Length: 298
Image 1 (cartoon, one colour):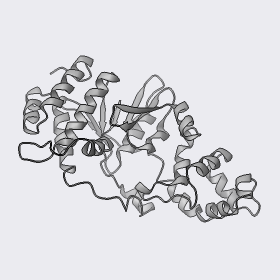
Image 2: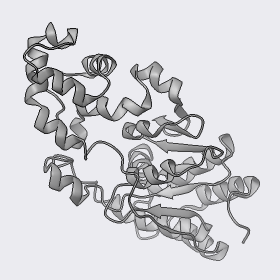
Image 3: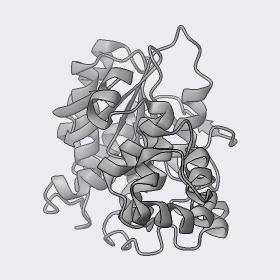
Image 4: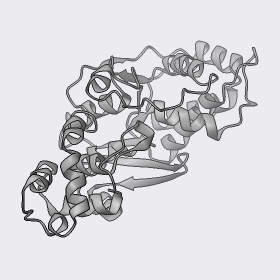
């Protein structure tokens, strides 16, 4: 099981009251929520292992160099959230947990590498609140468990689930996203194209480049563009934008990973739990993980 740690910590921060603080009065609510979610996943999903994946850079320089609007409008994290990542790393180190990041890249890209290199006999569940990772779904190896409400309500995406929700296979999801855009990432998409039109275009053409070529033609072969002059013009004008999106939207599967796991240290874990007011979630998680033998023995 791969946990999109950066995405989940953000959601936990806003799901758990900030009144949960450590001995110094600093919020520890996101860590509290994340550890409790880990425990629930360990009990309900019983994964053979859990890997925690971080954003090393939430706005990678290579993507910004291609399109400087990438995530340029995203609001900064609440001041109380970033310090909690250091706390989480310390706690996971003490648990002896597997942790991964890709220097200079997003958690999505590190997850992409692990998913792409998984063999046909492996089974990976990606737990995330980021729909970009839907493009990685690959039967029977990779599924996405999308957080609807914490981890108590997860929407499971295999290939059939992606088709049911979006009307297209996971292999075409990135093209669909390029057309639709994503305001939260500063990506406007093609003017006038929403989810419905993006799906129809993906259905009608074998690739996004085939639809752009048809839009550039004097007489379009496809009915959508032949009978939709505004859509044809929008796609034609969006050609340079879509060319940039070719290297923005697809999750990378070729970046170098850094992984680590320290020896489990229960004494250190107890110290951290006491200092950061995490005794409850640490105790519950320890019991859940030990029952499932996910983590090494102390």
